[in-house]
Image 1 (cartoon, one colour):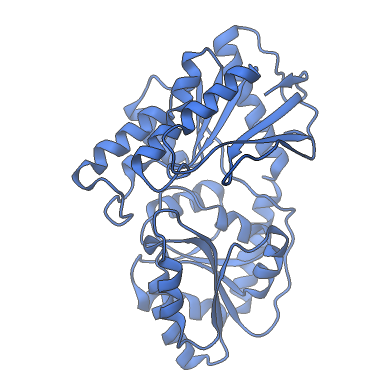
Image 2 (image 1 turned 45 degrees about the horizontal axis):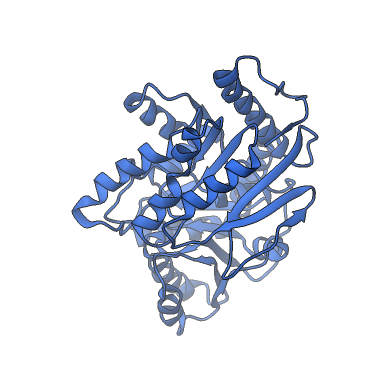
Length: 371
């Protein structure tokens, strides 16, 4: 967005580490680290800075656990759209998850018997905007039935990288790229990998990603489970510059999730780099595959034997892997970052018109504005 020429200025308000952090400039984007995870004033900090900046438009890009491990800390941050609305700022929210329609028990959602009520409160707080964007049409239709008052848009996550098929090299390797949490099904994957090793002693497995803020210590538990598994490794916080190499070593990307809260960016990333995907047949993931036209090999959630059969079948069938990769590459080549940018510019236009009448944004060649 900052490089598009559509705006005079783009300012990103994001999380700060311990202590103060001076503003940064990154490719024309001003980055200000204004809130700290786990605190109860994140929403207030965000809106206080928005009041000073007085932007033409605010875009909230929200995940329901991004403000910390506790329900109160997350609610404090997720109130920022409602607080911003009170001071009169036009806004667009991208909501990546709908906790209300998720399996809260499998997700180990905090709150016990009050978790369902909390999930409804999260939806109410996070949708206080002129336009609410959902990354899954499945979630959009669900929300439309329950909140016909909302102005909704469907914008898929899309791809981050220029589509290209990475070459395959020996040895065979599986990749699970995710956040480390029990509901990601990584214990199931390790069990399946143990079985696969009996027929494929040279097989390797990489589990990579970031620690989940609600499950401290889970990475250590996972590494203990992997200790006796030949060829298995666990990588935390892989630098962005090394991700292509991580996917290049993989013959197959596996999503063994027991539950999920929305669309998977990993599926798009695997598609953009020409990697076949095997995944649990959860409603969100099957919907993502259908909505985007991507091919994914699905297996029943929690079924180790079926997962092993799907993985083994793809490892043994280079034509099937190549066919899936080529098809997905063709699909994502039509939905690059330019397509995502255009969709958001149109959504910003709708939000501004809903507030102010004629909009200063005129996609796809908008007048220069500030956001």
